[in-house]
Image (spheres, rainbow, N blue to C red):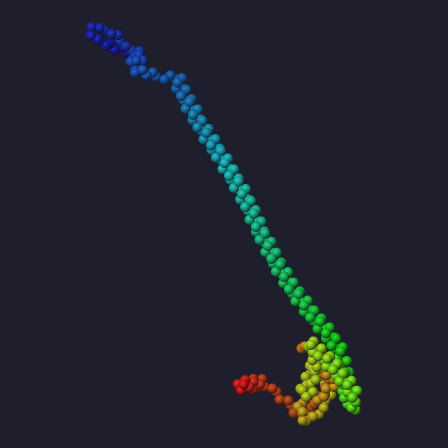
Length: 258
């Protein structure tokens, strides 16, 4: 639509809005479709590049995370294996210590047992030797007793003194080995140390008293290796029993007196 514009003394042409010059529009020209498409494509490329960068970063971070998780799992596996080895080593050490303790105990028992066996063997050997010597000692004692009953003779007396000295030395050697004679004349009869070969009636002696010793016995340590052959009295009064309390009272009185 054309609008008539009136100017003084002149008539100007009607100007169409579309025909306004660039200068009149403020030097602003509208963008062309090609320019709009280029800007859109540029923005799309930038956004695509940003998305690609973000995706690449995400992929890299995911790969790093996977690698770290893998390294963690591997380290955890190695740590578990080391812990298992440590536990196994502790178990082996405990078993070895237990075996060592048992072995030490077995060795101590074996050492004590063998020591006791050697002691028993030594005592048995010594006992056998002493038992074999006892008849010789008996013969020497009978010879000394018989020589003493003969008539006085200086040479015979010297011989008897020499045999008596030998007899004393033999008893001294046996005493060092813990051997001592059992000569129970006048003592109470003990069935474990004495062997009764006869009985003698004696009303003046306590009943069950050793009257005569035919053969001495011998004791080695606490063991009787040969019982004494004796005769035992009967018909006399019973031997009074000893009161332990009375004996303790007497000992206390003696201590106070001292």
